[in-house]
Image (tube, rainbow over all chains, first blue to last red; front, side):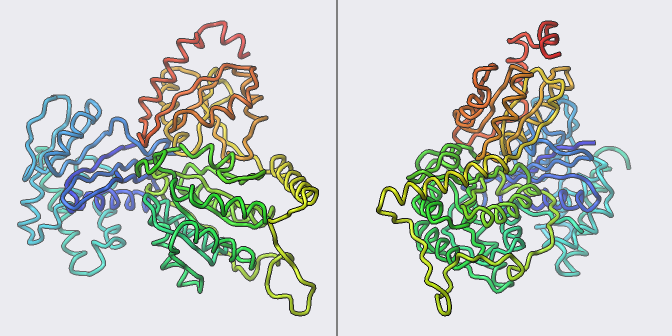
Length: 184
Length: 364
């Protein structure tokens, strides 16, 4: 099993944290992982992205030519990454902010309004964690509990109250993705 | 032991501290600012010294001082900053002072950019400073290997009293991977050095000089260095081979480029293309002989670098006319994709007829 994912959005949306949470969770469950942030003269409000590879085998390249999954949090990232995903791959889209019309029909498009769901949770900043819940439900990569445990080791889980909120955000995201996939 | 998920720059810092490094002098430059960031906090915890110097030139001279006093010491920078340190590196080599210098290469020449590149291969392996000298150059390709080679860098520096360069790039500095760190070494437990300058009270005076005005004296010193470099060349070469046993084409790549090449090789292997990888882990001493033997068996090599062709010259020296050496590179900080390299491999492989029966017979 090897899964190559790209996370992309505005700087400040917690895009790098999503990738880090995935890499950390997978490592804690004994997987091989690489986490590669795009690194440039970045500015707040500009675009940010990172590539995470999770595998049972040794990971050759941390660079993904054609990722299996792209998680898109804003419109500029949709333009940049929707064409890169491999045929038959998955595109998880923050449908609160992002157009969901695509120029190709060979992707598994999963729109989840994560910004709205985060707002309903009472914490706009948790949109990234809501999306990670959706990511887990859609990819089936590890279980939600693994992510809930790993959260405690990140900045998202330093305070008990924040940890609780983020664990709830994972559940909300997972449920929303299952609805989008018609599994509920 | 538990694994920690850390970015390369932090791995380098942590490994250095665990290897007994208690002195760090540097000056900030992207894409390796996370090294001084980490060291500024971490050295405080172990009673070490961190100085953000006023310049790269100052920092390498501080390295020289700490090394003369017997400490394990490190400085890090990225391409333009390493250029500024070259005079000091030449002095370290001439004075036979151990030190670890890490270069997280970025695109160049000049100010270039802050993206990963491998354009400093010549500078690292040929010596960007003046005079007859060599730096040991280690090229890690993963965060774990960066950790392991940092330990080895300090050991080699002390063993040979020579500067050792760790040659990474912007990607190695930023990438996170799980790392298992060895147990920390207590600097007090390291073998005592009998040549250091610690004050001459109660013992004969010692001097460490690189100014040797009498040509005969300097010649003798140069020959002493040469014998040391010969010993390093004989004993310290390190490399990795991957799927070379049945290969009809071998890709030669180091560091990040080797990672990308491995991804490309996995891809084309699935299509029946018999290709392997030779990855030098020591760039100086370069593993000429093992690569030469491989070249005599396979006859076809493809050097792949993130520059416009530097290590390929060492590959040609290794092959010595006994095989075909081709080159593919992307300079300027462009990170080539595994797909792109896979295309280059296939193009060359089929173009040279390596899928044909004649190639099979020759390989056998």
